[in-house]
Length: 447
Ligand code: HEM
Image (cartoon, rainbow, N blue to C red; front, side, top):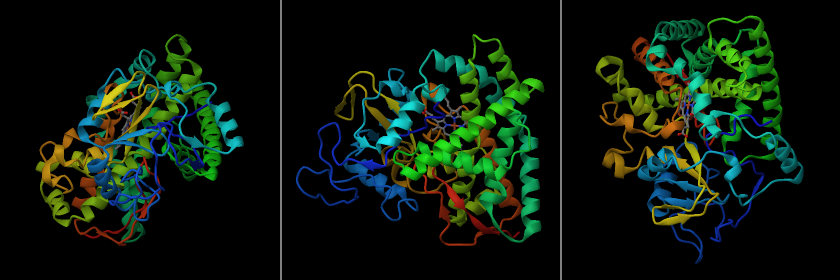
């Protein structure tokens, strides 16, 4: 069984071939503004370049300017311009299903390929990776829990959790890792409560598994990362099965009980669909919002004037989260698959190609945002046009929840501790290309 196949498509490879299936030659994996040997592309997105995680945006800018419909070494097309990303995500003529993708120009060890093939056999059943009508049926089953009104009802609980976590942090000392103290536990507890997952399992163990699973959203993985993800998927799968069995015995008013009831009716949700939807909601519910709170706080700490604005002026409360999402997107890529030849930006792309939409690049495209595209401006009037939640009928189901958690966590932090400051100049990134975020964010808390 496959778990969540990913926001970007999760091409699992241990080695990348130097020639794509589309007949264009590539140079080595380096990014350069100079044109190397004839026949080689002038720029290439290279997440292995030192400094990529500190600043992926300068690489995005080069590719966006020089090769915006970019054929990557793995044979997928990556799109870097706002207009292209916007159009592709909303195009109902494109698919999200892996079965349409032609083999990519990648290699993996034979044993890994065999294990992947076995796991892919049953297909994937999450709404994220299914086209209509299955997509619409699955999304409808859960969507009423995620409407703005239902999510707004969670505000007091979210505020209480933020207050409690900040109380605990300051009680333990003025210097804290904000990821461990607030950014991770808040969305983790909220999605667990929303689903109705009982407390009890060691949270750090679940966090480790879910971290290994979401690493598979990246386009390139090492052998060890792939093997770790297999273990983690099996472990989370077993855990979710346990939880579902428990919920069957202890139904209540939560989302998981509603899904179990839908599965019992049979025709609306199969058992495998139930398990995979729960895993998707559980993982998507916390592995993304942690990055909104972490990346967003880091951006404010590095733009002191904006932090002070947020600390003192409530008029930005309705716009600032969107600007933080635009400025450093927690999810950097989504994807679609062509099912017929597709023309974009003057390039015709074959059927069966993967289109990776570089959300973080679209969010910084000056053709959309003007000359201030790289500035953090909490008053930006059109910040909500960002691409961080994707678009079209796959656009993020949890967007209202993520905005609420981000808003409450960050406003409470900077208003309670307006002197909050970075305790290091070099915060540690989590090493994920797609789910971009910090492993740690040491800060000092002061009023
Ligand atoms: C800041 C936090 C978040 C970000 C940046 C984010 C981003 C995204 C993106 C980019 C997509 C793919 C959209 C597309 O391809 O068009 C997506 C889909 C999805 N997200 Fe989120 N997400 C966040 C939080 C959440 C939360 C809290 C949940 C709650 C459960 C959630 C549940 C989902 C689901 C279920 C989908 C699949 C929707 C579909 O295929 O119809 N996300 N999200």
